[in-house]
Length: 349
Image 1: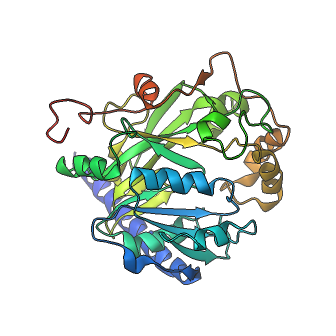
Image 2 (image 1 turned 45 degrees about the horizontal axis):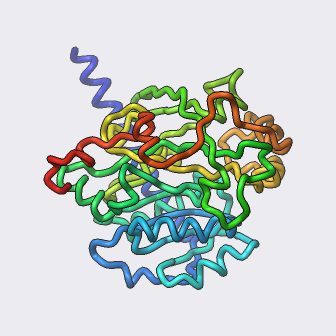
């Protein structure tokens, strides 16, 4: 018993130092950011903030901005990693966007998390913060009617400091180089199909971070090596504190208790889904580029076969694929939970 207590104390000590090391790292990373337009003086006390790093996402940005504005995001704090497609110019013209440029390596910045960590440290403390990628649109139960200020008030009233989400890959019914609707159409018309499962979740010590895998990418690209399949759980919505740190993208956090917020599909607690638009037609060209850039995985060689397969524009739709019908469908499938958010007896319903 004494040995067990010592082991737990040593583990807690190491994790505290890891968190401090990450915080020092993000402080240094802040020096790599050059402001292109800074509208952070307009941030109000109760504003919900969105943080994102992107590169060459001009095709996604109109829907991305409209979606999150519609949910109630007040200010966007975005790092542009040397886009050359007009993304930065579009964002600079938006009155609710603050924009920084980072010229460094996306991979060396922990896939952009060092840059975003610097902004979260400086501007996020005390705010509800969404940290997402440009190819992720958050939905949650009844989000069509009840927006993020209602959601965060509900969580805060219950002492819950955040909400987890499943990253759900959407895809077309045919080859990957052809969407099902033209550019400018809603994402769920362009990529209307998804895998309802299977998904599995493991808890990893000592951080207690969850590891959810499964879905279409495992089915098509990693069936023979499922442990290599992408991690699909995220913690995108957090009431931020300056002592928090993302460890592996938004898949895990420190302190470890934050990782207990979400157990993946089947968790009955209130959670969301990140509709993932990775498989728009441009994925074919982007995968060819990634074979030379090597910026999106810690071990790029292990995923070279995956990117080569994407360049061949395969068909992902299978016999069990489902057509997206809305958040009620995701709730019924257990891909998100509602807790007491939809219960008529809820004090803030």
